Length: 178
Image (tube, rainbow, N blue to C red; front, top):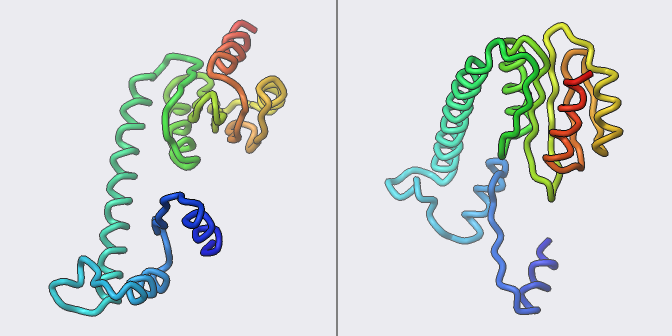
């Protein structure tokens, strides 16, 4: 990685390395290499204490964000109560968030819930769920028609497709007419 960064710099490409997630020892080593104080170390204490405090704060923020996301999903699911088959497109969901939203909607909509997250350019992640349903044939047909892959349990599947939003909508419109 270092060689690649040096090559880019020598080619005139301005680049920086960011550490978005790393283990505690890697973060400590990075601060020691740069001989800078960690921002939470300015009031005294060791580098190790500052890094652990920062990681604890990050974990708390992630937990709070997940709890808020769950509340939003629950409210969205409640608004779809009794709607029957539901097709949703949501931006920026992780596979776990996709699963949690699909699960919340599935228990309330009274039909099949399909949630997609992604873009036409990069493809979509999906989850399809139906309380007590058997989605094996639908999943096989969807993956074939939308250049996808995935699977799961008979009533809950996850995967990805390489198709446009319009193609996905058309597939489910056709399914709903069957």
